[in-house]
Image (cartoon, rainbow, N blue to C red; front, side, top):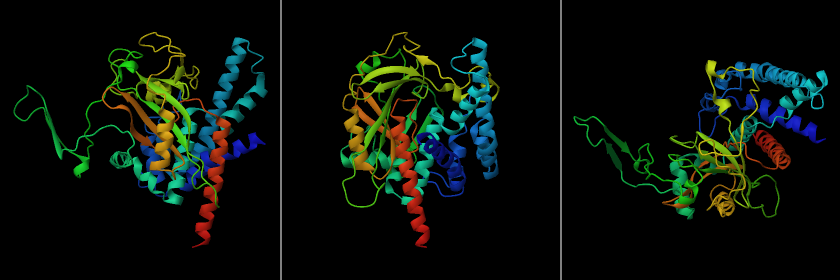
Length: 389
């Protein structure tokens, strides 16, 4: 049934595949293990304070975490939830050991927290890139993405073409307060862009001093999933989250994550995942570590944003679906960072191919079926490659 299929998907894509890919080359790192170590160093299981990158130091450590550490964490959280229900007298929700067993099974074999979904997307991208060698993964390079958008006429954030730029303090002397940057367009490392601010309409929804607050839209493509003739369906948007920046923040990485209905461009509700980024002693807690806070209002303005329309977002679905089809149709999942700006209108900033839903709402059953289809397809393609020698 569906529950068994979901459990099989989690065991394969969420655990076994990690060990299978461990030493293989990764599209943005020397190996899959290196990518895990780099991207998990600021993430911890809530309540532990231990960065998950600790378990990416070796294949043995990763295996130990997947076979013992993660099941233990799921069991402890199931027990904590059952105890909390008993303490509050919520016998209808959980009843003794049966409740613990069901929660343990769900946390281990059918989790749907944002981090699990993110890692499933990462594992799919890594395996797909290795098997298919699709050139679309080059778009992870921000300069390659900018040039591809410009060549295809896709709205993208503007950049400066000068070979080098200098930034210096208006008053300091003697070579102090001086910085020089070589432009990536001319062989350097830095993409040089003008500063963009939120559109007037978006600024009205945010506190004073909020950073550029982008929307993360996820699209899915079925290009290459099946053999034989027939037209491949157009990539489809799965979810949209508006990252409403906090007052005084440098970027929208410090934000409230507002779920958005993409068709109507209206805000549904807000949440956050900052408790997954608490490391060390400040991350240790026994109080509902996995539960995310919810927001009706932006905490810096106290304005209730539920049902509010985000002006300028109406054409986002067509923009990202069209961009996926034109720029990188062979990549299964793409996370688009879309900005609604005063200077450049609606434009794309970059793509994320090991993408994060940021707790957005989407059809999860359809998503898990999609993942299952890709896992089956990649297994078949890899088997063919091995047979061909």
